[in-house]
Amino acid sequence: MLTTKSVVLGSVVAGLFGMTAVVVGCSASGEVDEYTPTQEQEPTQPSNSAKLPPKSDTGNGAVDDEAEEPSYAPLGDGGASPNPSPGPGPVSDGGPISTPAPDVGAACSVIDEKFKKVCGKCGKQEAICVSTPDGTSGAVSPYGPCGGESGECEAAATEACGRCGTRTCSNSCGWGSCQNQGVCKAGQIQHDTAGCPTPGTYRSQPCLDTCSWGSYSACEEPSVTLPAVGDTSSTIWELKTDTMGKRPSTCKRNAWLTSVTVFPVKLVNPSSTDAIVQIWHSSVGTSVDTTIHTYLRDQPPATDDEWKMCHTEYVDDCSKLANICAVDGAGHWAGVDNVRVPANSTLIVMNAGYGSATKGKFVLNIKTKSH
Image (tube, rainbow, N blue to C red):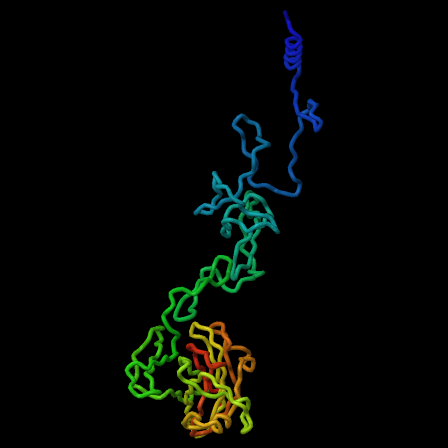
């Protein structure tokens, strides 16, 4: 006996064979929607795009109107690839940069289509697909000028940095970190008491142009000869708690004194003319809170009255030198500008810690501004 389900199924099957074409879908309410097209519709082409070459033949004499236009991918001989690889390809104005950017003169299929490529410091330049003289094909025009450069360097460029190192410009036109650096900064001089039996004497060791340490000198008192105008002397010293001194509040006899760690260095001006110098501290890799004051003497002060009679009052920051003290690293460094060093004289640069427990290595920089 036929069931109700069998009758319904038979009706549906009969209905399907009686239709020419039925599209079945679900409406938002869950009901089945049916749509029967009334006529075949012809796809349209944009009226403002001239496509070269014409559409391909399918092989049976009919034009394949639905064949997708191939994207451009240049070959080594400048021709278009019959099997283009996936990717963004050339784009219109405002789109992404062509990957890869086509060469000038390469074949292209859409007249007036634009191509972009990276140039300079992450800038862009454009070319356009132009019709060949015979009008049968398209070719990539010369690229326009480079514009919109927003980076700080050209991708893959390299330059020297740090301690004889090298840094490379990234694909986003920014400098990478400094690589393959040496052990010291060329021109700096460090000091050591090793092998010096006389207290207060040191061996100096220069950092060579290769950013490696040279040979030690004989034992000498801490001293720097005034550099030439425009040059800077950079020497490395160390504050220790076993070397104490005084920091005067002002260069007057009624000044009050504070006990601090000190490291005095002689600055010798052998010239027959006065000199104006800048003096500042910078980092050896550690943060030290330093101050600077100076004395026009051949030897460091020994009594309270001598400590009070300074040549320049102490400075506790680097604001007078636009904070150049922090160039080589963070720290509470001190710097003073326009210090006069009389002709044929010695200036005691009193490198001091802020307190009696301040210690650590520092760089003493002295630059001659004028004679």
